[in-house]
Image 1: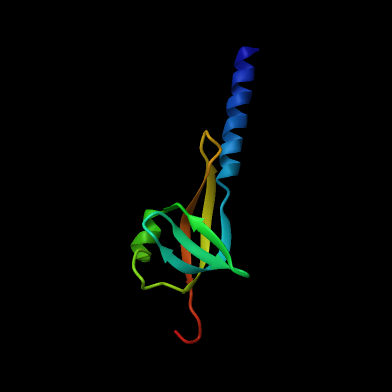
Image 2: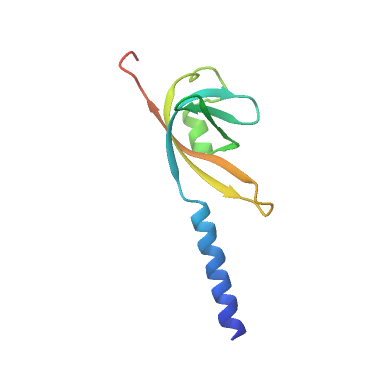
Length: 102
């Protein structure tokens, strides 16, 4: 019985971890990088801040420079929680939305 309970607990834990890593998307304007977080704005003066950015994204887009400031992107990201329940937002993919002017 203990073995079944342990397996059920592990399954539940894995299910929670997968759920926490669900990918989300938002279309937002890049506002810059301050050395700590990547900021984007969307809607009516709403902001979202990302603590991390995947290496493949940083290879394609140099977000530490001003090159992409005020450009629109479709941002794919995941939100994870640590043991203290603090949330971490990580960019996993970016799609540059080009306007007719570009």
